[in-house]
Length: 327
Length: 264
Ligand SMILES: Nc1ncnc2c1ncn2[C@@H]1O[C@H](COP(=O)(O)OP(=O)(O)OP(=O)(O)O)[C@@H](O)[C@H]1O
Ligand SMILES: [Mg+2]
Image (cartoon, rainbow over all chains, first blue to last red; front, top):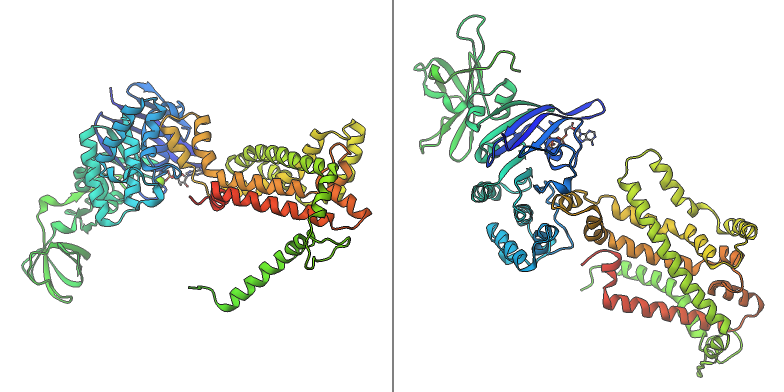
């Protein structure tokens, strides 16, 4: 029996199918990401699981129990809202204690668990502050502590890191994953950032216009995307002509193409532009096959200046064709 | 270090003086020993204050007004909180109409309301009834609370309430522990505005108060139509003093900006 099961779940607003026939099974302890472009129905899906949006059709089962229409305050889920949604008139400690108070946990035990949860997110020193006295990242962590302190069977995170700067974001991704593994809570995270989805999830659920278009491990989604749309959503890609006339088009990711001296590869190309990414160089090239992008590890040697004639080479084994009918 | 230019300071000084001057003058006149409305010279006197308290009907009407303003402001806010919640949150047909209905007393002249209510009260035998007087006040002051509360509630992040629900709080608990504290500045500001409007209301009240329910402004108006002596100034001075004392007290206990603006 799956831990959480979405069975043909739909939410329609008049003619708008915000979520359409979504089915998903989540195992206990799994970290799942809902990934997709803006407006594809990620938040709506999460809100139906949370109980703030009533499903038009379909079922939600948590640990075998049908909770499709159960009131939100009876579900006992931990939720981190995109907007933090901290209680502005309560201190950090009171925010975190609120759920325990609702569970009628007695005072001493409550204080102990609040302290523990705040320590987990490295905020024990800020227990007495009000939310407005915290930075964005600190508020985010309070929201996380408030959600996990009630030891929910399921944690729902709606773009929990979207408002953080790159550095803090990466640190928080790592922290999220660590906390999730320490506590072992089944987690569903909404994001539109593929790197974030890849780095923390066991499986990625790709959504597009209200429907699920792929469910796979991050590696599979990147290496074997189910459609050209997904392929381009999760990374850059190059199109190569079919191997045989009338055969399917082939794809290759920019880091899997090799740059060789002119005349020594399988296609000639000219460097049009180059971008320095720190650990890598990103090249835009012009070739008889069309425009190409190539990513090369920055190994310390000087980069090719624009205008350089080079050759492209690749290993046939890493070429991908997309499934028939995939769009 | 002044951050305002000298022109801005001058302008603000003029505005404050323009608003305060009549109040200051009325308070000064209250201390005159003369029989006419005149500024006191070298000798100041409390005779007009003494005279106020020799008129027990002034004291009664003051208590009437206080009581009336308290009751009707509380009723108005009690009505405006759920109504503005429904208007800002709800998604039902007739929402706009409901808002219009609640705000409509703002555009009806109190004179017209007074005449209409006078006739209605006579018909239903409600003349001299404190309850009906209070209800009439509720009608005219509720819009003030509505305006403030609707402003406080729009742009309010519902996900905070959702967060409380998800943590297991009942709807009542969410209202008591989350919603109410967050809209408290709107509630207290609305109450105060209602109180002041009720306490101050004279046009409509002239028609619908009876001797037993007469309010201070009506009493003052009636007194002033018969005789002009500095006792009116003394009454006004007393009200100004009382208001200032209340404001100071509130500020000491809660901080006025916290109550009215919501800064903590
Ligand atoms: N209350 C509503 N009434 C009508 N349409 C709605 C409502 N809520 C959402 N929608 C529509 O449903 C679709 C899915 O919305 P949703 O908020 O789930 O998107 P999302 O994937 O979370 O997007 P984002 O990444 O921008 O947050 C959108 O097209 C949106 O316009
Ligand atoms: Mg969203």
